[in-house]
Amino acid sequence: MPNKDFATTIIQTLRQQGFQAYLAGGCVRDFLLQREPTDYDVATDATPAQVMEMFPETYAVGAQFGVALVPLPAEQRTNGDDTVLPQTHAVEVATFRSDLSYSDGRHPDEVRFSQDPREDVARRDFTINGMLLDPVSGEVLDFVGGRNDLEAKLIRAIGDPERRFAEDKLRMLRAVRFAARFEYEIEAETLSAIQRLACETPAVSRERVRDELTKMLTEGHAQRAFLLLDESGLLKEVLPEISAMKGVEQPPEFHPEGDVFAHTLLLLENLPHPCPPTLAWGALLHDVGKPATFRVAPDRIRFDNHVDVGVKIAEDICGRLRFSNQDATQVLALVDNHMRFGDATRMNQSTLKKFLRLTGFDEHLALHRADCLASHGNLSTYEFVQKKLAEIPPEKIRPAALITGDDLIAAGYVPGPKFREILEAVEDAQLEGRLLSHETALEFAKREFPL
Image: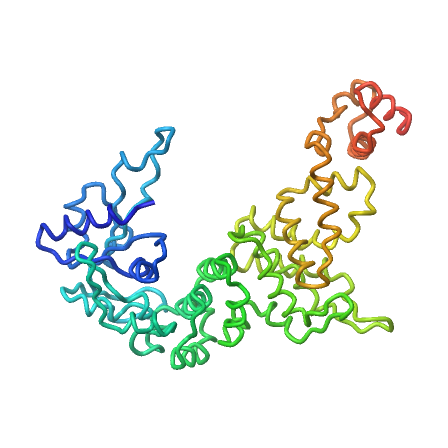
């Protein structure tokens, strides 16, 4: 990860050649908040060509927009095993610019390089992200009132909020994320602009929406983020399936916390931090099938088949937001299995062991714990499963197979669909502790599935 010293070296090199250069954006905000920045950006009046001439390893990522990346020197990009880290460990160096128009709601149609840092700051998103810092003198250049808004704990668009959001509609989601992350309010005119323009979020690529939502879910303030998404009108545009949870009542004897929306947001607050993205999405979507399956039965409110319905809805959401196959598989598994914990104490040994060896079972267990804390508060099943995980050695949960299909062929069985049934029966008996050797397993197969 590039550090402040490396970014400062870049700035000093640029200045030695007669250019202006400052730290810019989020790293300045984080310094003022006494937080450790996750990355470092440099703003300068040097053009990308001039930057690339001064730093030979530099590569352009958006030269037409004035952006180049300066990687850490190779000797600083080595791990302990002497492998070289990728060039993504780099500082972004962007040329001062003004953006003339945005017809696609994301990229400027044309940029004009500038010598004036004020012009560059004026086209940025929010005041708290619009400050420049001289890392040598410590002087902060604040042309937009960013320091005042940090003190007031406000997320405010720079200039006309409607224009800022028209330029890049993802900024509406970013406003919500920053407000949640820092526990700030969204300034009134900025929020009003979001509420008016929320319906235009479909213009944003689904991948960018997914990534922004994932950050909201995993940065530790998901409940606040989703309340703001709802208040701003963005939730029904980007995740209407979650908006549909509002007002869907639940049986109070199991869910004294309230409706499905309230339960889901409370559950998000009980997730571990940092939280794996798949766990966060599984938590968000675990009850997504309830609105469509709500019914009032004679005894109580019921949600028949809400898991199966929820898996289908979650699959649609993962597809729409273009999740990777691997991530989608885990998210769907979390939705599909979250109710199975209710049967854990009654499972026989083979069923329990197969349950415990689900891929990413730690996420299943974390979801169950958060689900309990967000409803009845009873963690007895969670504690039972934890005890079983501690008691049962891994090799007993996932033992080596006692026999294979080749063994069945050698014993005279004809390959076919029956093989799977035989091998599963053998495995179940093995997991129950009734079969301990290759010989006893083969005898069991011949006895239970005669030729």
